[in-house]
Amino acid sequence: MLTIDWKERLTLDTDDYLQHKLPKQDYDFEIIFIAYPERVNGKIPSDVITFVAGVIAQRIGKKHADFMPFYRHLWTKKGDYGKQAFATFLSKLTPKKPEIYLGLMEEVMSKADPHDINSLLDKVMLPLLRKHPEKYLSRVFAWTKGTNPELQKQALNLLIKLIKRREDLAKEVLSHIQHAWAYPLGDVQSLHVQLLKTIARLNPELYLNVWHEYGIYREPQIVELLCASVQDYLPQLEEILLPWTKSGNARVKKASNAAYKLLMKKKGA
Image (cartoon, rainbow, N blue to C red; front, side):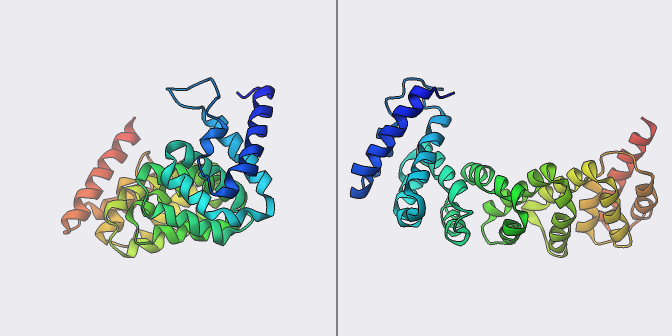
């Protein structure tokens, strides 16, 4: 945890950087904190980076949109420190100009690896979604249907994390992902299953509604989704599963038999 003395020094060094370095497009912002003596696994602690980035965001005030090249440079050229600072900037600035900063986020995520995408969504989008889902949820929904496969996966992961923290959003999230079930899910099918499992734990009534809605279907992908989501014994599932176990479709029969076997095991436990 940063001491008051170090907060004061870092603030002074940040002000000096903003006055003498940044106007000259000197983006070596690590000069602000490199003298900090403590290290965690050989690196400056993340709370130092977050503090410095927070001071910068506060100082630049209404001129924040003028520093887009600086933000991009931090993400692309300054390694972990730069990416931590970038995430801090976006978490503070996105509410001020959502279209500008969400566009910047999408820009960097288009070339990012899964770890960096996940980290950015956790640090920037998850807090914003928890406070203002009405402003940001539609953007995440769009990512789940986009052409970037890694962002698609991490957006679904983000929705799972969100409903764990905002159970009241489970119905809206479920309604959105159900639209995707009409098309092949491919690599993200397991994430749809995980979301269903999460809803089953949080809101069993909502989960059962899905089973009743799709119980008349024998479309293999939907059957596989529902069957893979079975975790505990619910008597309502037994009567839906039983006809599926007698299906002539190999995928339907395989998935439903596995789920029925698990259901009976849980029933007898």
